Length: 143
Image (tube, rainbow, N blue to C red):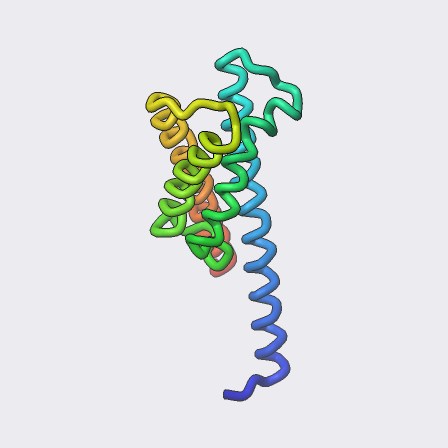
């Protein structure tokens, strides 16, 4: 299959848009993980210095990066199923494993439940809102 210059330019522009969209979506997910850490530190009267927040967030941020790769999210950063579900599951499971093995933080059952629900709402909610906004923008551009 041969590509005409115009078709190639359009394909390249689409690829750049997807890459930018994926980068922004990953940054949003990472920001939500940091918010999760801030709220957790605050509710447990832990410190709110950047170092204290990072010490809580880093296992989940590392897990999020792995989850994005495992799920294929860079290609479809706003999909709820299966990408979003895999991202939430891997972020919680790998994050808890890193927390258990490499920090002095606990992984009590109640924390696992709260983290799963919190990260589930935040990360899936971001995807749902992104899909709604994208659909709305598409409808407006075709009208």
